[in-house]
Image (cartoon, rainbow, N blue to C red):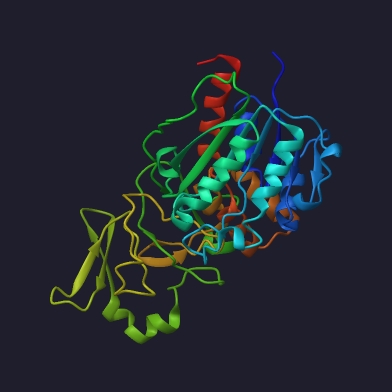
Length: 370
């Protein structure tokens, strides 16, 4: 049976590309307007037969190759709880209609779309209702589910809504509900060849197996290396008053955060999200499970305990939290791409493991495999 072909819109660094090709599909083209992401995509993923567009708004659909699956993580800033949530009033929100235009003109048999969980309840659910209405009016049967990356083999608490459509009334087979496995933990590896001791971020990286270290929410700045985050605020509270680190039950790090109450300290073990920049904040200290990180954003301002000091996660660690191969970071280093851009790429990406699980379920429906 011939492989079904797909087009990767808002491709970023190719999370959907890797996921769908692993599931047995073939990429025909991609589109993104981030020059650094495109540079890495072209160097690491792109094949000779793939076409490239740098702006979805200017795509002439008559020039596009034929494809069976349309996929894309369309811009989420308009719908995210981290933004102003202006939805379709924001020009980024209207880029959904560019997706709809391509679906209307090309009529691929299937599509897979991804966005933030906040899309579901934006504007009281009216935004999502509009999206579903547009897709169904185009002739697609639509189904969706919120999936969390931490249940698909990567230690990151990242909830995203996946929307799958099939064109025509004869479509059969359900993609959702889709269940994942337990999340991986994070173990330490020293002196990794991609991050030697004298390289970025102090030379320690984490890979998805073993016992997890404590991950810190929103911990970091634009600097690199081993350091305590948000230094002016940290100095204001005095380090000795805020943080103590000690060993409990062997080598397990435990952090004590002074909380201003009679008890004096909040205790947090491995896997707890702790924001030292806001030690008294209850809303910014989410706990997401042992050995699991908070959701990466485009700054990847996340930290970890390293020999009882706090440092920012490396770009390699952030790529691993999104399920990307280590070789992509090596390729980016060779291209001279900065840490700041790598953090942005990781935060904007779809989690490969989750997209692959959706794609494999679609492959079962399409190819009749199990």
